[in-house]
Image 1: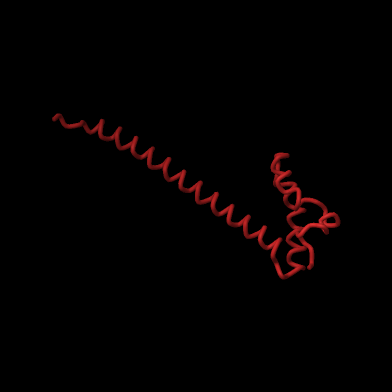
Image 2: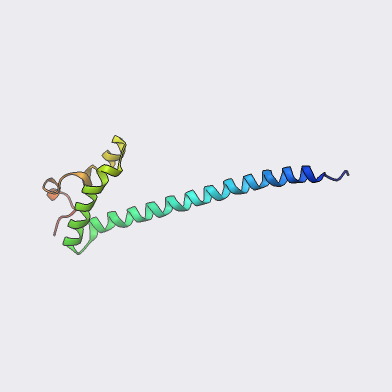
Length: 99
């Protein structure tokens, strides 16, 4: 069997490096997505289940202030309609309701 030249070996190693870098990027994106989902779950949980009505009100107020500038797509804004509604009309919902 003929031995590979140094040039051929370098090309193979570069291809392997590209594959590994792509795999690492995929892992990092998956980790980042998981962090975002968990953080969002915590925020929603605190809005719905907090025993501290003042905290829930302040968190809801902050989200109503910050989310409109953060969300750029209409479909994304629709996902948060229950949170984005003004505090006065949110009284019927569980968010920010001091029960």
